Length: 535
Image (cartoon, rainbow, N blue to C red; front, side):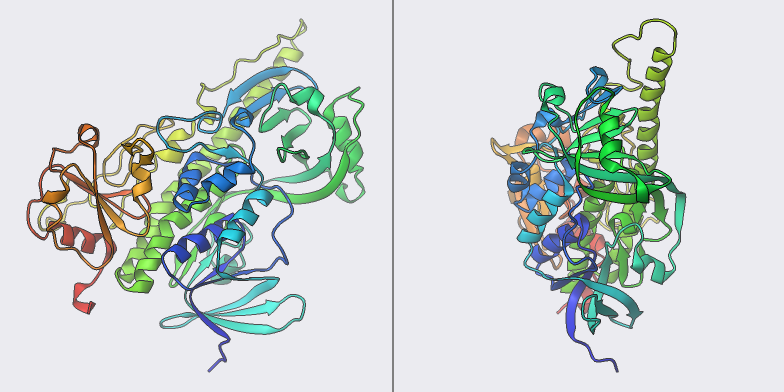
């Protein structure tokens, strides 16, 4: 038998935002976690730039939203601007809905920041044992655990960790996914891209017209931090080893700009587009870019991974602590893989919209007459029309009890729950089971979203009618829903909503409890808990 150096409940592979967020979520549930990252430190590159409104809701629940916001750009940077060159005037601009200003559908606002600023905040918030410079080289699935072999990249020393489950958040080139032989579906590699981090005084062109992204014909320019710093993104040149990067970026700024870029870092990478064929292999689960690589246009990739682990971690905690059955983990793929496919489609559509705006400008400039100062964008005021995808995700799985089949005996009629309604590109709040619980104010400074955490929550206008209900193993909180919100949620004065720990509605009773054990039955069904095994 192999010598085991450590035993944990969950081993997380990958120390990016998704893995670090999973650490924080699992620790909140009291799950023993260890994280390994093959890099020797956090990434120094800015990489992902947008923390959308749904991710900020998750960080609000972890108590991190204020700190993350304090190091980010102000809401006026929640805008994209199109220019011929950076020092030209805008020929088009669009707001990032949910970033540039508060929206009534959420208690938080998304932000523009850099991944290398977000990650240290997440790392500082986690008390988990983390090993940087340790690469996973082997995985062996056993009957009730997974044995992982790690190699220290400096010393070459091998260690073995036994975990009840492994969460692979190790990126688009995931070692775990490849070792498991899990294939991918989708376009694959779309483009070779280079990010150049540089310093330059560009305030004269941008201070009065801030933006998170300036999209030009010569690459995209992104301000990195409120105190300064820039990045340029563009196609990787064929002879990248001998490219004059300061010269290339300076030329991209525009003819006659007279600014020399001081380059500090250069990173080459591939823009991928795919979804893994499976998100689960026994006790091993994929999340983030390991499960789906999303093109960067629209800022959906990292945020989709954060939503993955928000969906997964309460389920892992339930299985580890015994108040949920192992089958609950099957609902992770059932719920999140369709979201990944829709998100990939949206990101590809975003890219087409971006290039369409540039094509229209190209036609204007080559029409023979004086070029107009504006281009009518090929989309509405909804930035890339994605708010419905960010807040309107609806799940269908065994962890959701639909209105149509929620009866005293639960699912005994053999019927199939209907597909959740699609919100399209706009977000329409809904209290139907499977949807994210809409943001409603319980008190002047407390949202419905603040009522969810390490527990299931019953929201009802009449708590007394439900307090005598017997419950299944697990944690249940009962919260009073103000009477004025009952109709919006499709409830009578004695109805109730059962909210999962991830804020999605697990069940809805439009009227009073139909029996004394209906809530117990619902919790047992949602968690897949086998009551015959409970003590």
